[in-house]
Amino acid sequence: MNILVAGGAGYIGSHTVVELLSRGEQVVIVDNLSNSREHVIDRIERITGKRPGFVKADVRDTGKMNEVFAQYKFDAVIHLAGLKVVGESVEKPIVYYRNNLESTWVLVDLMSKYKVPSIIFSSSATVYGETDQVPINENAEYHCTNPYGNTKMINEIFLKDVVTACPDISAICLRYFNPIGAHESGQIGEDPLDIPNNLMPYITQVAIGKLERLSIFGDDYPTHDGTGVRDYIHVVDLAKGHLAALDYAEQNPDLGFLAVNLGTGKGYSVLDLVHTFSEVCGKSIPYQITARRPGDVATSYADPSKAKELFGWEAEFDLKRMCEDSWRWQKCCDKFI
Image (cartoon, rainbow, N blue to C red; front, side, top):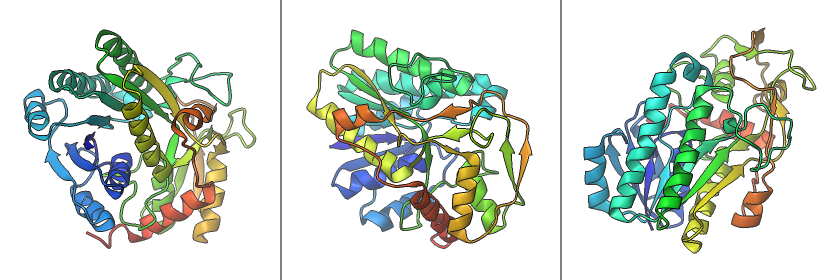
């Protein structure tokens, strides 16, 4: 297959591209590099021995994207091009709505024009928001608590409407829980351009000495240690989930719309993660407790049984392995430039 990976130079995208190339698919990355680096393409090639196509462009640029679709004749689209920081979305809702919605509209419009049959969309467990249902399955109602989650919800609703009106297009929305970890080679991982907004890269940069201490947002949640509980999933497991979804879409061209959780089904607190990482790296991780962030929820972890039933997919790596690979990445990330 010839696959467009929008946002393919980013954290999840680069790992997904590695898995695609490793099994023989043709890949074209479109990325504006707003939160990624172009040398990731070289690293993907080192890992796989194959170089993906790369177009530096904003997915919202209809003219440029029309050229890309006309040139490559895609069989499917994997859409990961979106802004993703909860706190930032609260501060900059206009930016988030514009970026995360327009990118999907442009891609789907061009899919219709060029007869591309399926899209795998990067959704999020944030669409569930606060819920009493834990573990969370796909039947839980939308209850977003921040603009970022709202953009994912609106995109899902939009895709439902599209596949109803255009039965020649199918859409699988993968509701990610919390990806961490890195490729075992140490060559690709989460590499924020500025001070990290996500938990794991902040921990690793404290461990390596780039940052002084970790801020933990709230220790008064109704959890076993007061800190937020999340379902952490290894990014390679997540990447493989995209391939499983792609295969399912190809085998079921009339599936219409489908939403599927990608998680481990296990919840760990922020402090659980800090302590496990500390054991792996052999260092204490200094931290301070600060106020809760707007839009954060206390507990969120997946019921991943639907992915196993439909795709034959389930997460393989445990929390220790996630921490080991994250630490290896942090120690190696500057060596391959």
